[in-house]
Length: 192
Image (cartoon, rainbow, N blue to C red; front, top):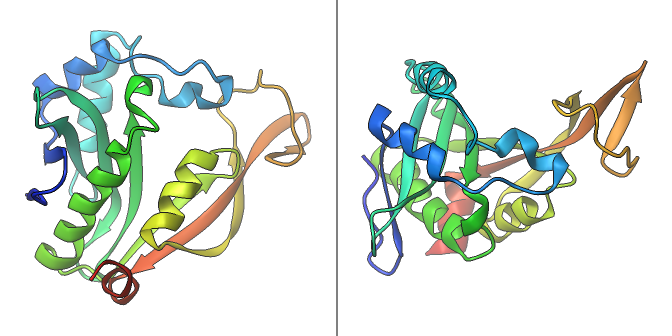
């Protein structure tokens, strides 16, 4: 279980079903490109479905909570979790009310400490939409390096098309994805 770095304002704990129901308290994003991160309007059925989908051996999800009030403000997930190759793919989502306040950075420091020191993993991978500048800034600050590009079908086909961030395949909008990674050595070099 991830432990606290004393100077941080948040802690991580294994995601539980009761915590998942607190998603109903979240504020949604106004930006239509971020609609896939809106968890505040989910039904009980949808929350249960989501919770069951993250409870598999290949996934480890943690609630991000504030020390000051134990409020559930975000979650971080390790997808494609592989203890043999010592790699996983990062996922991170925050309540829209708590972005751009440094909580994501604090949560990532706690997660990375746990990931590289306790789990003894060697590489963390991630994929981020090119339009998500806030996330890109966070990952670069943490020391993640670019490894390539990809694209994937975008969940909100009603967004305003912008060829800096999206591409068309047929009549469908695909999001441009930046792939990044952070190695244990790079992490220690930057954060020791």
